[in-house]
Image 1: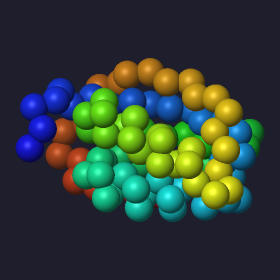
Image 2 (image 1 turned 45 degrees about the vertical axis):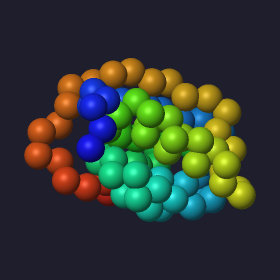
Image 3 (image 1 turned 60 degrees about the vertical axis):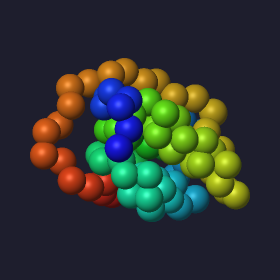
Image 4 (image 1 turned 90 degrees about the vertical axis):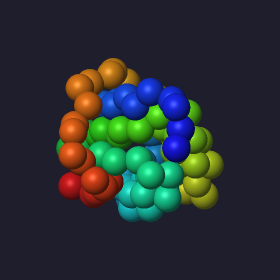
Length: 93
């Protein structure tokens, strides 16, 4: 178990992130890392995601996603939001 503080980040992710398996890649990677939260496509071509866990694991998730074959993250708007108690998994919305 990590001693690192749990945080929750709300992100709006821009780039080649729709139609390339981003949401399902995020779901599988986040689950493997033990992160919780959700991800969904937005009407403007971006992806919205909230992810909860340690800062280190959240950064690893983003590195894994940006290293994907078809995914290309060009920008992220990010802010810290309140922790969601009792959340047990990461899901696609």
